[in-house]
Image 1: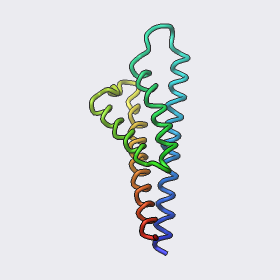
Image 2 (image 1 turned 180 degrees about the vertical axis):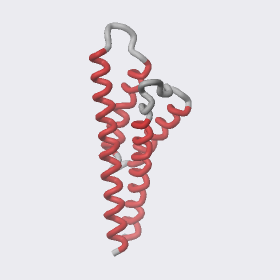
Image 3 (image 1 turned 120 degrees about the vertical axis):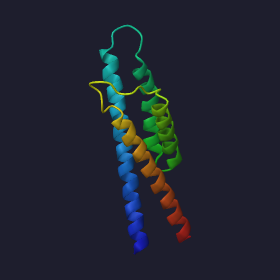
Length: 127
């Protein structure tokens, strides 16, 4: 009984973290599309170039979190490194909460990784 409860909770954590990662990825794509439509002719700002890389990486992470949770974990690690090294610029007024999406993605990727590893351990114990 405890094994079934643990399996259900682990699957719920994996599903919810995948939904969070997918919604953040779709938000990034929407933000990128709307920002690109609003740009005039000229150089692309740095944050758009960063989101051109992040949006597909986030989508790939959310799509592969079921089978390969280490992909989401590696993208989350690279995002955290980009925040620490200020490749992703620190937020300024009026966008103080801009990095909250990155932090939510990092947490969701960690939950997906831990849930995926837990499910593999449960499967190995049952064999």
